[in-house]
Amino acid sequence: MKKICLLFALSVLPGCINAGNYDIIPARNDIFTIANGYGISFYDGGERLVSSETIEENSYKLNESATAYKGYSVLSNKIYQKDYYEEDYVKPNKNGALNSSSLPHKFSANQKYKLVGEVKINGSRYRLIPSELDGFVFLIDDEGAFYRQMGQIKGGTLILLDSEFFPYPEDLKMVNISTSRSEQTKPIKGFDVKYDGVRMERIWFTYLDYSDSDGEKGTFENISFPNKPGLIDINGVGFRVLQADEDKIQYMVLKDEK
Picture 1: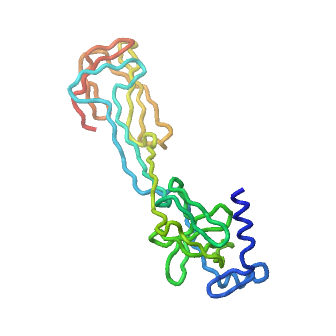
Picture 2 (picture 1 turned 30 degrees about the vertical axis):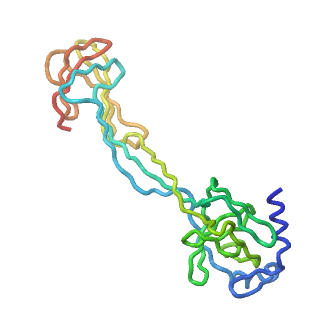
Picture 3 (picture 1 turned 60 degrees about the vertical axis):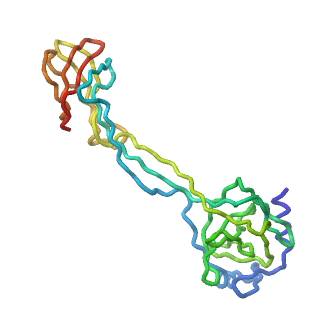
């Protein structure tokens, strides 16, 4: 109902619109409208990547006894990429409205708006906020203050309507806000060694190498060592087996030269 009322209010505005310093009837003079309107620089929309970092994660500690059950990690060293994204919005600094001779447009301090793009009017930049009607926008300057006129988007051009709007309260304006999130990839480098039990007098492991991984999968390899005292070295990480059987292995990491 509110959208219908706003549409009716716009339909009864004076039959011409203001484009720059000209009054133009858009249905008959589209070429002049484009020539005398204000070119819009549209924003890409969506979130943007602001930074990235690599995170290294080890599952072991030096000189501490540990236990791993069959099928679980004995050693793992994984490197991830973590990306940070932001997305820009504006929101009213308080509840209020833009009043005009036709119908007021209400703003809630709890609502955020995605900016459509920007225009230059008399050398000043104005950002465009979508209204409830497709193709119609409100304008704000760099300080968030509202421009006195509403606009209509026609292709890549903004046409200003004649009707003027006045904020209530007078200090009603838009403030900038940003939302952020982070996203961590699957391992892009590193390795994972899982215990695979004792068979034929040998201790078996499943080795997963992420060095050539595309983030979705790595390279598997089954490796084994004699089941006897000694230091086992895998990718520069050395550990001593304290006890091993079919179900679990007890061990201690003694060196890390990876």
